[in-house]
Length: 271
Image (cartoon, rainbow, N blue to C red; front, side):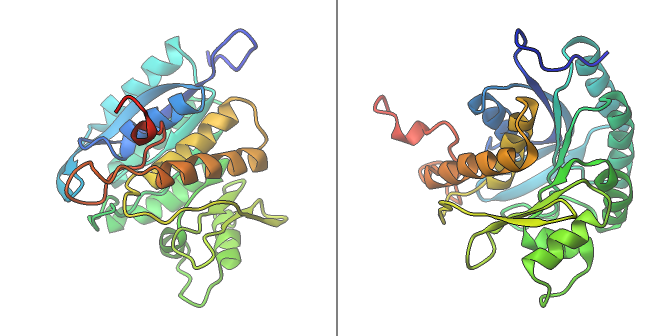
């Protein structure tokens, strides 16, 4: 039985995603964002990556049955108020996650269609893209691609606007989409629920240490939905969290692009 948010219960959010050994993205970033947004995080690991700030060295997919078992264990005891889906990687993993969503019932689902790592490594097999589109996107409450990911999912070319991309994503089946603007000149996120599009603006910091920014944004969005916020309000709040985390990015971590800092560790007077 899935227990829902009540006044006496701390909301919970489940991350179904890959592990980043460098701690910058994946489930590590998701758990940090959940906690920063006042939500207890649980996880179902889909893949283990050996990576650091310089790149991805190795990837090992978790057996589908183990992915399903992780979700069932969380659902049976703790409950799920929102689901965040990140790195899936393979056709087999996507099939397992489709089964997992049968277990999480009516919990809202945020899909971050992770395709490429900051270093350029492929995190979603090309043959798995269609499975993601057909099985996972239609079950999503909101999908949060950046502009390159939105182009890959829709097949639209460079001439398509951010609004075109958002509407085309929604046409794939999710209730809504937020095409994030980190790869655009104006750095504006565009929210679309099929009937309207809304520009989500505000501070958006460009930084060299932005590893995990997409994970942080989508996880914060899932956390705010778990806390009972409306979708557009949650999108605005998630942007603020991710933007500040990028602004506080940890340049001193590693020899490549450092991780975002959702807790403001670098601003601590104790460090």
